[in-house]
Image (cartoon, rainbow over all chains, first blue to last red; front, side):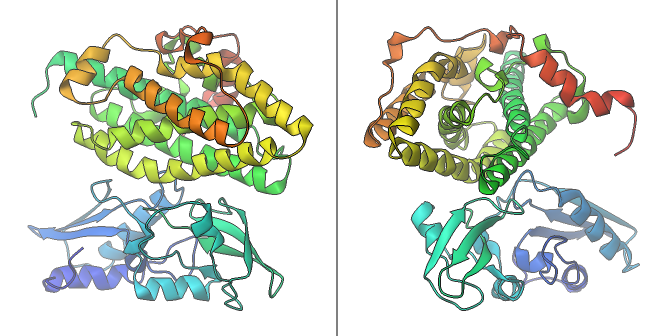
Amino acid sequence: MDTENFNNEQQLIFDALEQVMDPEIPGLAITDLGIVTKIEVLDKVAHVQLTPTFSGCPALKIIEDMVLKAVQDLRHFEKVTVKTTFDVAWNTDMITEKGRASLLKHGLTPPPKNPAYIELDVLSDTACPFCNSKNTTLKSPFGATLCRSMHYCNNCLQAFEGFKPLM
Amino acid sequence: MNFEQKHIDALKELLYKMADDQLIIGHRNSEWTGLGPVLEEDIAFSSMAQDKIGQAYQLYSILNELGESDPDTVAFTRNAEQFHCCELVTLPIGGFDFSLVRHFYFDNAELLRFESLAQSTFDPLAMLAKKYKGEIKYHVMHANTWIKQLANGNEESKAKMQNAINNTFADALGIFEKGPYEDVLIEIGFFMGEDALKKQWYDKIKTFVESVGLSIPALDSATPNLGGRAGKHSAYLQPMLTEMTEVYAIDPSADW
């Protein structure tokens, strides 16, 4: 999404969405997760388009409701529509630098950027979010939520989670 | 692009069989929740279940836009003979050996199917396929890792994998059962067709299985377990559907 050329109204919406946090990762704004793919205002109607991280993500409906409320609360538009589409397929490179910092703060290792391919060795090469050691073992490519993998740090002897790359 | 009626019919048939496959294997995967041999496997099968059911939902949503009922109604109110899933996905979870090999056969086919559909001339499907292939990649990674690990475990684990590969092969071939609109789908470029997919799949899994020291039956050595795409299912599907829809059936108009 090209945020550079936003007009005032688009910026107003974007600013409001920066306050909407991912319900599964507190502190991570949906704008930093990269799932807001379009903000448009036509005839005083605000349109927000989202894209799912994973197609089976159960947080989808909740996020739609949160977005709707955040934009309605601006009391600036006659109507607000929120739509989830697959027009833009989400991938982990759409997470902003601020988003990556939020993941780390939450104890989740951010995904590798622009991986050439995704295989077990890419996942095995995950640094511990606590001590930064790369002496870690992949326990499972699946975790507590669809976007996480489970790892163990052989250095600080701590189990941890990674946000897995998706392209 | 302007579609004729035969194109819409062909598209619906393709979407229904894929969505039904996802929903039913998703439910079967979820039957491992709480029963996995280790916690990580419990979580893996549950996560894959969630992916599959989410994928089914989106495919049913396209069908909804093409005039079919809404996803919940389609998923929860049909009887077994109205489902177009292949027989492989309907089978009970059995032992972990069978479930792993089914997962291996099915997801390797799924990955190739959606990689190909990412180029479909039907845009809404192409967009979904682009998304799904990234997700299914993890399912294939999971299946292949286990097949490799157990093939290299001990004699017992190796024999269990080989037996499951042999015994499930005919069921797996049923994935590629052709529908009545196969030629239409290929002609308009919606899908490359089941025959082409089967060939890609067989080459791929043969290479992999042999690389881990196991063997795969010859393609013509087994009679494919067909019928599922036409709604002819074994006795296993209806009891599963009855259980799956138990809560929905109490009050179909409830707002969740």
